[in-house]
Length: 424
Image (tube, rainbow, N blue to C red; front, side, top):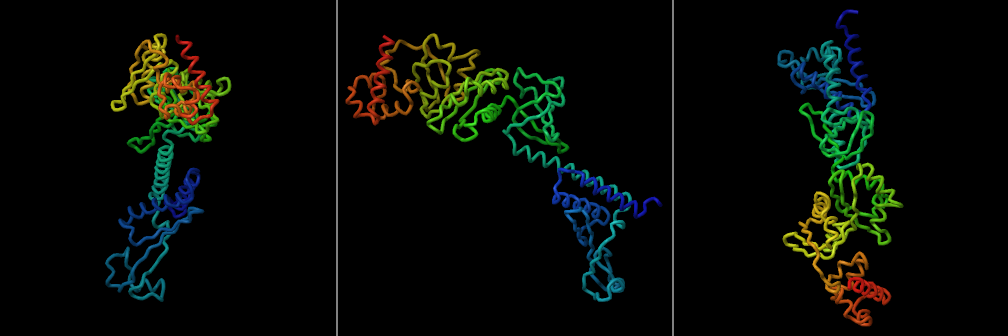
């Protein structure tokens, strides 16, 4: 067959469209758009304009038609053969045409796509498909920032950076600085992380950075293990971490029947242990949410036992008094516990050795975890701010002052009396 024949050109076009059909990630509408853009680039290259041309694409098959519109003018007034046709030539094609009419002609692709342009058309399709795929991946992962992602380790570099692939073969990058210090991976391992950020390389390739250090990674792990979080019965307010060492999770129960700490820890610690294993032994403190900043700061310093909290709301500073044997727990190894408590509460916390102070003088709010936060608030709203304020009242007066059942009031008095006696 002669080189450059119409059959060759049609075969090249067919091959190009078959390449497109085999690109499984492209939907029909996008395929039609890409074909049209590629054809228009060829037309622009060949004729220098798109003005007289119209390209129609069948989105189901990828088949296309190219139409050219030309104005019918007198034979001696043809100035631009792309947009004009002489009356004699026009009437030879369609006797009903008159001057001023528009002659519409369907073009033979073989006249436009000579061998060189046919193969260029194929290259354009593949290029546009690649660009479309890059943009699709970029936008898809931009919408997943902060979301959980799982990949298989494809390569571990000498600097410990990791290249992983998701289930569609999309590349995920886990830099060494986004790994927990105890992480060790080899090719074929499964890595869990969150999408940290998405960038573009100079060539337009999406660069998907994932992280295991980001606090949101711990948040996603808890959501996957604690069904009450997924069901909206527990709300995570904040997560702070020293990755691989210690973390604190501020969590609120939106259902009075659910203990947030118990729900997160799970039966025999099964839920929290699963998370801790994934985080290479990271200690996780679950802090029940409260809008009382004194109590929140005391809880944030867990596992230490706090005696009293003084705050300066304007300067966001707090002085926390703890028994001598609790100071090391409050501060933590390398100061991690107090630093995390500060991040969690937004207060600059200073831990001070507790001075001898009678139980009767201590704020009632300090015993909210013992008595119940709602119960303590009822007493405080009645003007009873300290343990002594409560115990100075008679039972009958307390029952009148506080809007609680008599049995509840009696139980509070009993527990506070025991505390006073134990500390004498």
